[in-house]
Amino acid sequence: MTGDLFQLSGLSLTYPNGTCALDGVDLSVAEGEFVSLLGPSGCGKSTILRLVAGLMEPTGGRLNWLLPVARGDIGFVFQEPTLMPWARIIDNVRLPLDLAGVPKGEGNDRAADGLVRVGLGDFQKAFPAEMSGGMKMRASLARALVTNPRLLLLDEPFAALDEITRLKLNDDLLSLWYAQRFTALFVTHSVFESVYLSGRIAIIGPRPGRVVAEVPVPLTFPRDLSVRTGTDYGAICRDVSDRLHAAMGLAA
Amino acid sequence: MNGVWARRLLPPLVGVLFLLGWETAVSAWDIPPFVLPPPTAVAHALWNDAPLLLQSSWITLIITVQAFLLALTSGVALAVLFKQSRTLEAALYPYAVILQVTPIVAIAPLVVIWVGYERVNLALLVLAWIVAFFPVLSNSTAGLAAVDPNLRDLFRLYGASRWQMLWRLQLPSALPYILAGAKISGGLALIGAVVAEFVAGSGTATGLAWRVIEAGNRLNMPRLFAALVLLSILGILIFALLSWVQRLLLRRWHPGGTG
Ligand SMILES: Nc1ncnc2c1ncn2[C@@H]1O[C@H](COP(=O)(O)OP(=O)(O)O)[C@@H](O)[C@H]1O
Ligand SMILES: [Mg+2]
Image 1 (spheres, chains in turn brown, cyan):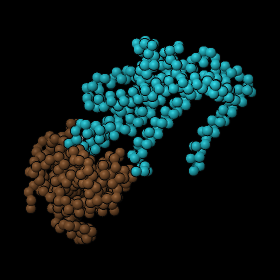
Image 2 (cartoon, chains in turn blue, yellow):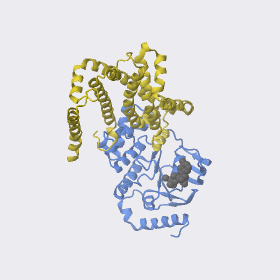
Image 3 (cartoon, helix red, strand yellow):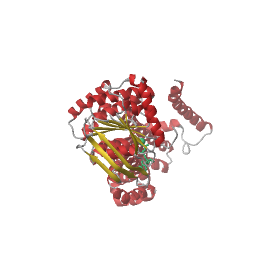
Image 4 (spheres, chains in turn green, purple):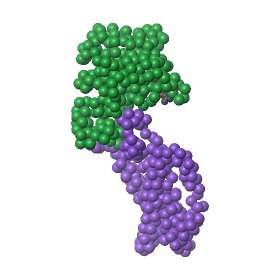
């Protein structure tokens, strides 16, 4: 077991308009872990990711990094592919390297490599408008991973995709995680998705959000289709679902 | 297919029918040519006065193009400046609006006097620029603000500098807006040039608008109509050219564009 990458202690955030989105979030994430944040819409999951990414400052509590993180050590995947419509896929994927001043030749090699790893090797020259939603999301993943980040933040990345594409992308994300050994913090509101992907699930209660339960997922990696049809998977999903409903103050 | 053919063929067909009707009406009701010249007389004037009219078209076109380019560059540049400094925007934007809402006809004599009759083309340029400038400014301002918030966060996450934000994110995001503004501004530059020439008046200016005034004063209606025809052709050319540039530059943004 490796050490923690970061710890959130008593993390709170009140938006300037007075909305208290988070109140006392406690969570530690170990290096190399795959952790899901599971909770109802509006409970503050995106806010947690934005705080961890450094896009906002908390209004209370602390965020401690136990390992050094520099620019490019954090990748972010949004719910929308968030590609630049005016740029070819390869240029989109190379963006983080361009912004860091990496020479274009080297950047192109690394971006092309990243595209191959997400199965888009033949689409370097395509424009986003020419690609399907699933392909755009793959490009978005390739862009987030092109800097070889220590931490990958994913904000409901597959929620807008159809079921078949989503299952395929879940497997591809896990393969990338085995291969590149980054730490993943994955936001979702799907119980099934969180159980399938993660080593641990943090359930976030309704607003103001805080971690109301942490559930380790007792399934071994690597995981594949056989997991989804196994009896363990169903039982764990049932358990997580019960806890989620309890957190929301509803009967299971 | 039917729809495409209808859209290609109907406008010219309507035009030909209209001209035929016009010609017949003029001869049937014996309308005097100083009230309404028949299309054939206009065509004659176009042909006979071609050297004079083309020279005047050239002058109007040059002023229009200069005013448009000036409006485009200054409008975008000012929008970029406003984006960098809220204070500057708050201080100057109202004056840009005042310049826009003040009727050009009202300021034209002043500008002509200040710039001087001996430099009347410069005065025309200034006036046409004032008319053409605002759509570029307001559209560019809107465009620079219309950045996808997630993309902006992504740039911030990777520590993008102000310069990188501007060149790699804000300006490309604003491009569709800037081009839409440019399309309006191109037409306005021509209108501005014509109005300015009307105001500058007698003999100093020699563009198409002056030909219209001159022909009107001499009751030379065929030539007046010929000048009007050339003015609309200029307007159509400017609009078509800018539409083409717009399509070319935005092709990739929309589905169906080929890479
Ligand atoms: N910029 C903002 N200003 C004010 N309130 C916000 C802002 N962003 C989000 N909120 C509010 O904070 C709460 C948590 O939002 P969010 O983190 O997006 O939740 P989730 O991702 O779990 O759906 C919601 O009630 C939302 O309306
Ligand atoms: Mg969210």
